[in-house]
Image 1 (cartoon, rainbow, N blue to C red):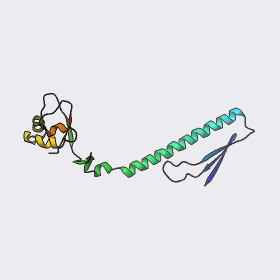
Image 2 (image 1 turned 90 degrees about the horizontal axis):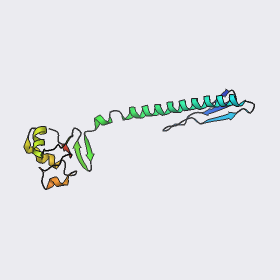
Image 3 (image 1 turned 45 degrees about the vertical axis):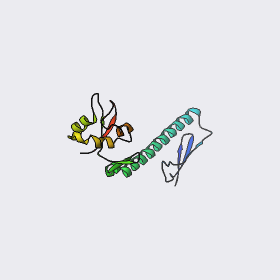
Image 4 (image 1 turned 180 degrees about the vertical axis):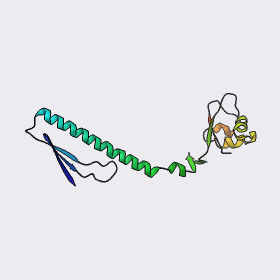
Length: 148
């Protein structure tokens, strides 16, 4: 569908928007040679504003459509793939504070100091040194904590 609009000094032709991501209508502007400079400038500025408004509306509509299509994806994820190892979605992290050990972290967060080895296993990929001494942690480390 082609739409022609005439404005003082301008003739604007707009083709129907093609389908696809971010598709916008093709617009061409013809200039009336008899129009005065201020009339032409005013019409061109109005047309540029209208085109910008249509473009923003088209992009906003496309963003809304994509958000609707992807809504709920996060809720359907049951586990995350982190570096080839899968962890449950409800995996928490704990940043090690000064003076903490893996045992104290396990006792505080999992109510069982004996589970320090499980925390260590969940973090071998991040901190390979835990394989040699699974109770030795350094301040500032971000440890994955298994769900209870």
